[in-house]
Image (cartoon, rainbow, N blue to C red):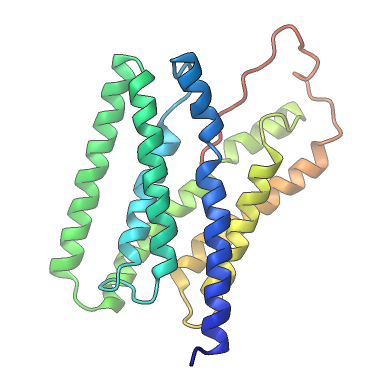
Length: 237
């Protein structure tokens, strides 16, 4: 019989999966625009390269031989891997030759790095507890980097006193995603590695929403430039 704690954990995890799916899907309009214009323009592939590696490590972390009972972590990050591969493939098709070379070098470097960590973990680290420690720390590092990446956008909001560079629903999704996975980590069995990074994510999302509330009604220094509208900033996920 399924315990109440296990049931609650699964429900929260499923909700977290749905919200995370929304986060992974959110760049889709950007790439639809790239396809229509047949150019990546000034958009950078860096956020998607970073998210690709982040998802790969979380999938590895959720494997039964690393951290058992983490199926929901594996499923959503597996979906994230597919999304990031699609985004990067589109970027590669419409990028300049120089940007293509840079993209291939970074992806190759990530593949080598991931393979090296996976081999070392499987061959030199024995037992799921020790493997969870090694991979979990790496996952936290990359997840925290992903969550705090909007700091540059938040700084721009404060500087311009305008929220035009910080989409409201993306901030909401970041906050809810962090809260969901923090709750998931706190329910038995306790998962410190999921807790740390997503707790920081929840705080980051809350700060974004506070900034939005503070500057929503303000007219920023660039808001009155109708003739030369600024291009929306790329949001790192």
